[in-house]
Amino acid sequence: MTGESMEWWDWETQSIWSQPWGAAIDGELSRTRLTLLPYELVPWQSWRDQHPDTKVLVDERANLVYRGLSAIDRFVIGVSIGEAAKGFYFVSSAQEGVVNETVGEFPVTVFADEGTRRIHVLLRSSQPGLGGSQKLPDQVTFELVESPESPGVIEVQDVETNST
Figure (spheres, helix red, strand yellow):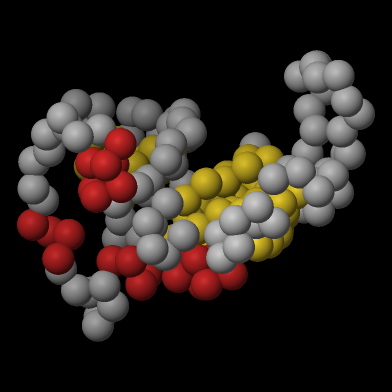
């Protein structure tokens, strides 16, 4: 372990892989970076509601407690764009609901829901070449608002265009 981050030994290439760097730090594949793929992390019940025929193996390690903290208490949402990276604690992000932040020079929004444990990370910048008939602002900011059509229902609203 480096600090408190995991490292993995790759028997096939005799390489050591670093979790936070997403790269091999020693061995045949030293300095090779992993390709990051977009993903959605959801709890089992949320997934099961959407995909009722799914089967899964049970991993009993999920119930382990480390230094008095459960996995969700220390879970970090990692966002990496180019050479810039930033971590957001799930619990504090979920308490805020919507976090508008920057990762390097890139504006991002992190959505975290403690009830469903859903996480979404979006780039808050209009991208050239994506088309569309309306002029988009260079950057958008999101906030949580109560739905005008459904009192008590919370929606995510774009501050610049007031769209939900």
